[in-house]
Image (tube, rainbow, N blue to C red; front, side):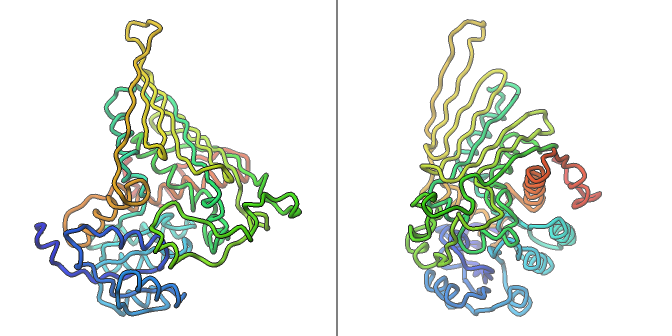
Length: 408
């Protein structure tokens, strides 16, 4: 299908879960497809929010309380699933059964049984693809890091240090609405940090084979108000996502803000070690309650060092003197990004999905296999933190993928 045909094809799209993440997909429709994406149906039990969502996009969709019912009752061309994490499986399985192009938010499921159901449905698909919302893979920053690693300039990659630190607003988001309930979210590694374990594998071109982790809630535990940091008391205000325009945030912001100092199954810091199948060792650290939100990494190779800061959009490279002298060569890069959220990743991911939905042959940077693998790794990290023991991933992969396990 050529570009002109794609631009004029009318797409009847169903949405399940009308929150802020879903809005980013509809904000990032390619310019030449403007007017061709018809938000035909929304499923969300929150009547006020789904109405506000439709208003944001001047749409007049049919409203439904049940996503499976919507998929069965409406004739649709594509579907976006952005409901709470524990609800993904039933909606995604039905969309795959109907052969619809599917934009599935991460984490794709919160149980091993759910992952198995998704993989079985994907294997039985007769048409189209599943795109998983691992937006970090689509950011110019991580794509440039991947290019440098794969160029061989750093030599053999020995180790990686990566971190994600949450500032005040993003910390509070972990305790907003359903996210603070691990029964719905699946836990912190699943809900927040599966992005990070996924993008490490993407950059390295490798999969984790063994993980070990420690986590606890040191600051955020039940304690007297006099011991609480004022900026995290409920009266301080709601949490804030690190993407999205103000109109969307104001219209769709959750009104349920829980206190980080209440009983919770969430840790406020976690440290993970990962061994990849190419031999690279990595550490990943995530900490709440920081002065600002950051994502950074250092990649240590036999021929060079890469130090990157996503928020600063900078990469610094260091190379030794080939002759063995004391001198080093330094290079600095500023990474150019687009105007969309997630450091330019939202517009690239959005364009891929909408063109795929319109019939163009697009290859997602993360499909269902990658979505499942990241969940298995996050589950293993949470299990390791609970038991204190390392976890091998091979058995988990065999449980879900069976004989159809994809080749890394």
